[in-house]
Image (cartoon, rainbow, N blue to C red):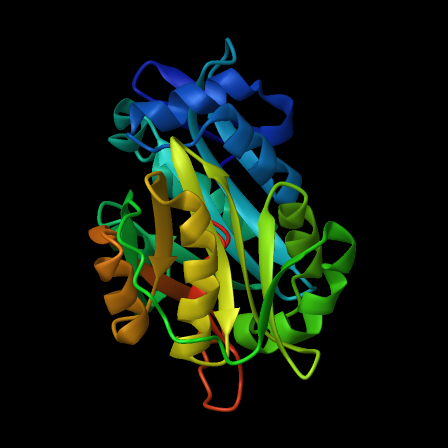
Length: 290
């Protein structure tokens, strides 16, 4: 594996993403039209590992991150290159660096249309479409009473969610949930004092994102999402989901329309394994976090 890549008249080298200033990362994401604030980058750096492609004078031309969960799985995200670097193979080089560092792990990512051919060529397989619903949350429909008790969960209570979440995500991700809970508002749904669903919301980009949303049914997921939307009415809101049915219809009714799509892909074991008797991820924690 090459330790550097030549881009026309200069070379790019891999540097740990934690050693780069936030403003350089923010400038990189702005350059490709991504909404990440410096605070969003800082949160993601606290959750995972990554590299950046820098030249001899420390200018940043690309990034790639991975987020380990347990010993054998990781999600990949924030794979960004400047147009100049992309045209000269920097995206492939960055992914090769990531794959080498994640050797032995099963992997999942959400691919943009532009990156899709690259991931196919690297052995990733298609699993599902992700629909990015966003807009100004309006006209929250009146819903029947929830089948259970909806309440805000304190940061101290976040460990209650880990066992419920693991079957939906496919592996334990308690560390991620714990860190997210420090910057998020968490709603939990309980029946007979047992967790049957939860949803988080946090600031992201120019607005807010609701996710993860994990529930046993469409009805529960809708109730959890509505709980958050009532606090976000009139504000920019984003929800990433793989759903097409009642849950997606509810988002559209709230004026959160689909603005773009990405593709969930995996390398190694299949990532998405839905079962009727298990909770399901109705809303992603984030494009990079899945």
